[in-house]
Image (tube, rainbow, N blue to C red; front, side, top):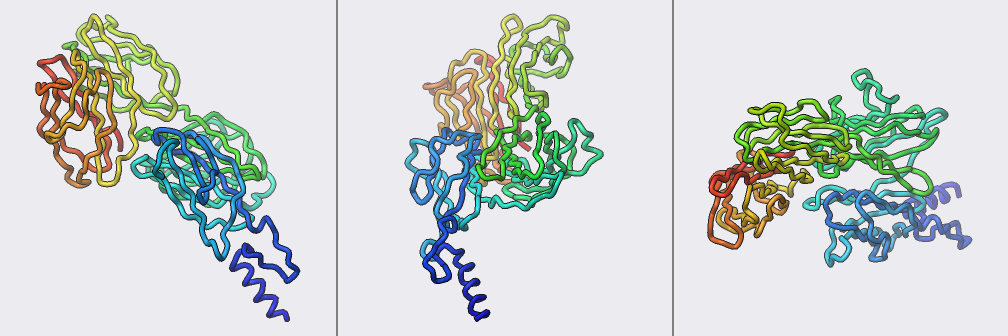
Amino acid sequence: MRQYRIALAALCAAVLLLAGCNSGNGVVSVSSTQANLRVVNLLPNAGGPIDVTVDDNPFASALGFETLQPYQTINSITQSNPTRTIKASVVGSVSNLLTTSVAPLGETSYSYIMFGPITAPRGQLYVDAVTDPGAGNFNLRVINAAAGIGAVDVYLTAPDADLNLVSPSVGGVAYGGLSGFATVVFGNLQLRVTPAGSKEVIFKSPPRDYAERSAVDVVVYTRGSSSLVNVELLNVDSTGEGTTLVNQLAQFKVVNASTVASPLNVSFDGVLKLSNIPVTGATSYQRTTAAIHTLSVEATATPGAILLTITPTFVPATDSSVILEGPAGAMTATILADNNLPPGPGNARVRVVNATANIAALDVFVDFSKQIAGLPLNSGAYSLELAASALSGTTYQFSFNVAGTPQTVLTLPAVTLLAAKTYTLYVVGPAGALAGAITQDNN
């Protein structure tokens, strides 16, 4: 009899109690046939909110970027239905962005997290199960959903503690990866993220309280920066709520597309930060606080004579380009949000910016084929993804015509692009004296 009971128990476990396994009294636990599911949208460039279905039944509607649908019950697997299908699509689209087969067990909670660039989106299911961390502690787990950043370390420390003196709370989590739960002493703590093995901070937020015996998932994701990340903090509890932690850092670069003959100096909040930027020159990304800042521009030939002062707002966890244009007496600036997500597999991405002095619109040709029509002045397009070699690169010819005409105003005969890299090609100068400048914008 004892062996029979053991065999029966094993059989019930094998089918997860989902097919109505019972001891013969006809009672089936409702909870054993259901699971809890939470859906999180961390797709930075999907182009709109996301609708999610489970087995073609509506689950979440118009889920915006950086928002979530807390736990709802869904049917778990049974012998006759061993999988469930999650589909995600941009609102109004007739095609699915993601289709994922999952096998949820009864009486278990899950998070389905959508992340990555639109050219290589991912939807992954993570089990939300945790053990008691004990008195005085809480549990911390890390999910790396930050495309293009690489593996990350996460620190939870006393506010402004020196990272050189401590080890990561969780270390070395690869893209798409999930750490185990780490036990951390609860309290008022500051969360910071670095590239794995580095002390370079790419995310930091104000300190916040972490409750005793709680459990959280730290989801590291990208808003499109080449190196900065953001964090979604997911509670592992009975409701499945979460909080977006906003990075206190941002990045910007300066591009000299002016017609000023002298190189330019740029002061940042009253302090000289960038000097001798030549015409067609572009700086590397400068890291700063995500806030309103004051940039002042002078020509190196006339120090003290301010040509332009602007007060841009740099958005948390993003990259921006500040493009300086025009003559000394009428200089202007265009500020563009930069998409530095990785391109699709085997491709390079090229953004083309019309930063000319006086051409209202350009047609852009790649190897003699028109790829962008009517690119307006002071704007950039992200639509070009070109096949490229990862080792030696692939060379293309870029040509630019006055929009709608056969008049070619600039040809760049040999632009070499590497796979997995994101570039910006700036067309600068007045008609008749145009030049091209290209920058590589991701690591």
